[in-house]
Length: 282
Image (cartoon, rainbow, N blue to C red):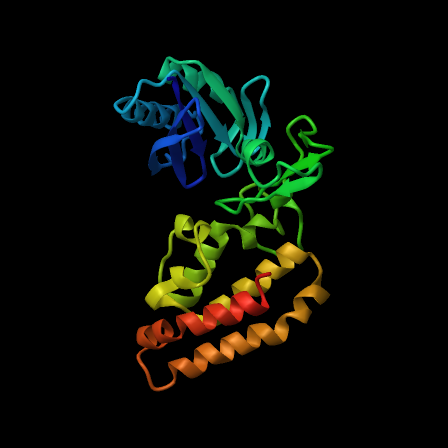
């Protein structure tokens, strides 16, 4: 039985899994992504350390790793990755030098779409789109049963101008990911509540339970509204759900009257989740 290390390099964390040739996930590992690592060397060393850790369970025969941004996958080059600070970086070669194993390299969202296309939700469809929400936002486009790359530039929807003035890591303003990514939601949550929340927590959110004692109905209202704008793309579609948002908001506020904030929201979690899931998240 052979095993490989599957590695996802994100702007916040590096996640990895030891996977058998039967596609069984044996174990997983995660470490913070080195910051301000414009050379890619520290990132490669972190990947090598993870591979060493996974090798203690089973010997690793090869490494597959994925990164965000505009890539030349055939050349193994990150042309530009804003959240990692890379430009024209031969990252596949750098990682291969550190791990001393055969290395496969790809775009994080496109390899996710490939998994869905081969073994997941997109198996029976010729046309689909895969949009994970993380430190940034990008999409993978499946057209006529094939992932379209446009020489590595297709699907970079995170840098569409959606009409705001906030600066983006790309150097421009108005980008979608600046207000709708997991990191953007994390920043906005802290700004409105004074509580910090990790990007990973936002990315792995399930309903509203992830907010716990720090649950804020005003933030929920705003975030859900932004999410609907992003998902539906049309303001009138958002307006359709406006009353339902307000009902959930008013419910949360009523629950908070005369009670400790954390206790009130905990007591109302089930009711509020039902309201949101029944009327908004379809």
